[in-house]
Image 1: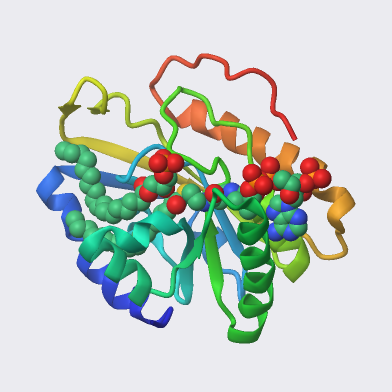
Image 2: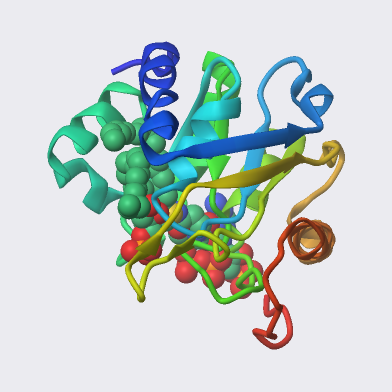
Length: 218
Ligand SMILES: CCCCC/C=C\C/C=C\CCCCCCCC(=O)SCCNC(=O)CCNC(=O)[C@H](O)C(C)(C)COP(=O)(O)OP(=O)(O)OC[C@H]1O[C@@H](n2cnc3c(N)ncnc32)[C@H](O)[C@@H]1OP(=O)(O)O
Ligand SMILES: CCCCCCCC/C=C\CCCCCCCC(=O)OC[C@@H](O)COP(=O)(O)O
């Protein structure tokens, strides 16, 4: 179990896109050229996100994932070997304390963490309001946040209708958001800023017709 295993996992999983007929069009690579630890946040539509994630995964980067994945057979084993940090969403206190520990490990072991701040898969056409864990993580570690947006899959993949075609996914890596000097009081505005940047990017790179989730709650 070591974050370094993600290099091998990445190089193997990246080939899955060829079997599914998927292509990735990535912009903003330069924003990932940031030294040291940071927190990546991205939107979460489906398990397919794993392919986009592996397309651009930087070195020494692992993910925060729901603990149920440990029990998902080979996938669980791969996740465990890759040093994924598992949280129990049914026990938010436990999840929060795991993430507080992770903020220390990030600095001690020079690790980057990828968090899906929507907290669940979402294909509504807009991003869901963000949970706060990723932002506490970045502020506690005083490291930058790098927002990444995957375009909507709705033009080629409709889960409920069981439709899947080949397609191109646009990935936009946005400029980092610094958290140096911020405290927990700044988290609501940090979430607002990140949400609006990502939601507007998502709508601009997606072909889907947006419909509202209502206001962003904190
Ligand atoms: C074909 C073969 C291929 C094989 C491939 C195999 C393997 C692939 C390998 C690897 C890829 C794996 C990819 C895995 C992806 C997994 C994705 C997921 O699992 S998404 C689901 C899990 N993730 C999340 O839930 C993250 C987002 N959630 C949060 O951040 C939450 O905040 C939380 C930490 C879970 C806590 O939940 P809660 O409901 O309590 O959150 P709130 O945001 O509402 O906060 C409530 C309250 O708590 C305060 N808070 C939150 N976090 C913290 C903290 N860290 N420290 C201090 N306080 C915290 C928050 O401020 C709120 O308080 P207040 O309202 O007073 O401000
Ligand atoms: C033709 C079928 C199209 C779909 C094919 C999917 C191919 C996917 C390729 C590799 C994926 C394997 C890794 C699976 C990792 C799953 C991570 C995930 O998505 O967990 C769900 C979790 O975040 C949130 O859970 P909920 O949405 O709250 O429950």
